[in-house]
Image 1 (tube, rainbow, N blue to C red):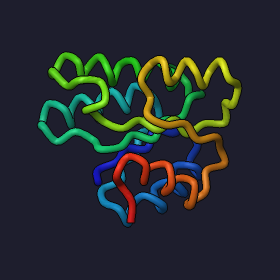
Image 2 (cartoon, rainbow, N blue to C red):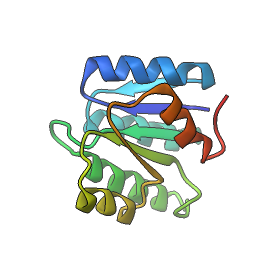
Image 3 (cartoon, one colour):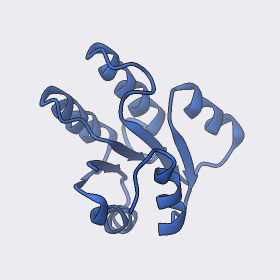
Length: 131
């Protein structure tokens, strides 16, 4: 499994990378712009990410903006919704309106921080990934 962790907080990036590394490549991006570059490069190389763990609150682009960009890039490549990268929102934002908006923007799952190993692996297990 090839994953991308999009998180502006160092300690959270480190912990999530530790959880995901045993499952395969685990790259990191520190903000939305960097995430978009990584995802576009992976799509252009025809080696897309299997999973993107995406924070909601980041400087610059927020998680929903990144999510919409991911889906637009996939659409340009002819990848149908549901067939592309699995996007798991991993954020401290827990209000119902924000969660519903993320699912309306085609996220595949939503975890409220702090994220622990068991909940993360259970969430990605629903996508068919795990150990």
